[in-house]
Image (spheres, rainbow, N blue to C red):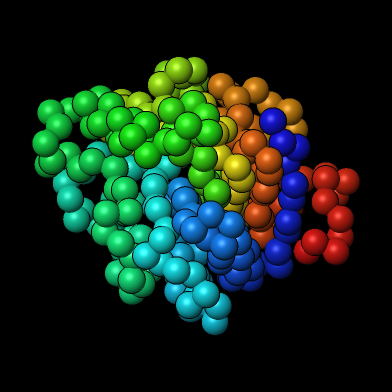
Length: 259
């Protein structure tokens, strides 16, 4: 378990630009070290804002997009192409504008695909992750270089909501989520064991509506009550916030220079 590190930016636009630059560096370093990189994307306004900023970044072309594996932390179990699906939004924000290898874009199954229900879809994604894992990887998933998570106002990450069964999962890497309090209610999500297999976990929070969630998650709350508190990487856990989202944190948690 890595101790959370905090970086607080002036506003959400600067946060997105800085996070995009940071992600480019991580991808390029991983590709230089072993020839490829593996990243888990997140949806929502902050995840999509980061992707849009990445698409506009001057250093974007330093990435070898053909040697990048993309996965998702969660997905709404809706038909292919539905505008509410994270992969649909990611394609619009960035993916359709860069030369990715389609075989390395690992979207979670859609509701109109071959799987009869969300639980079968989750099991299929778990199998895809296991097939990509190597002998040195942990927990039946590839060792993701960076796994990004948006933090919800209720402290949820991916589709792991407070007190629901999915956040209590200790063995499976992917689960179907039923009755999510945020629509749509049926989703596919990585579990905390899968999240914790990543080298680096980045938690993104911007806006006043995320301030209380950030304060709760960073105050020692339990992961069942505050799932964001249970999201951490093997070597690094990085909270990327704007000043509004950090407004309820004790100043002792981050140096003034980080703003």
